Length: 187
Image (cartoon, rainbow, N blue to C red; front, side, top):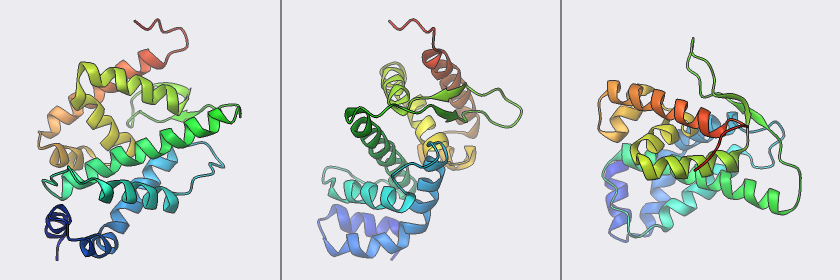
């Protein structure tokens, strides 16, 4: 069975579909987790394998989702991984441990990066604000930054052109750079 068929079975409530789906999507989920973890600080206590498992559990628990395609599943997986990482960062902050700034590699080759460092919780809040203005920009950031998808893969997942993804990626990076700047005045 392919991913789409397994997702359809899962949506129909076939509980064994979850067990059959995991080995089929694990490699791609592991790649997405690796991309998401590259942006994290050295010595992060959450490992990519744990990120995959936590995000997968959140995904299969969702009963109100109509999985449109394989790309849709992986787009939602990237979003789930973002949520896991942010929840993890918030738990650490709640324990009163100092937040560590880490590189934010929002840049493509030959393009300037957003800032030399960032706080994942601040990035999440900024992405939430961006989402009120343009939800697709947030999806592009999730797919490109958190999931590590190429322009082509992100375009396929969002059912838009590559040109649209490139434009959205450029706009989102510029907006987030401004929002995450230390002297940024937020409305």
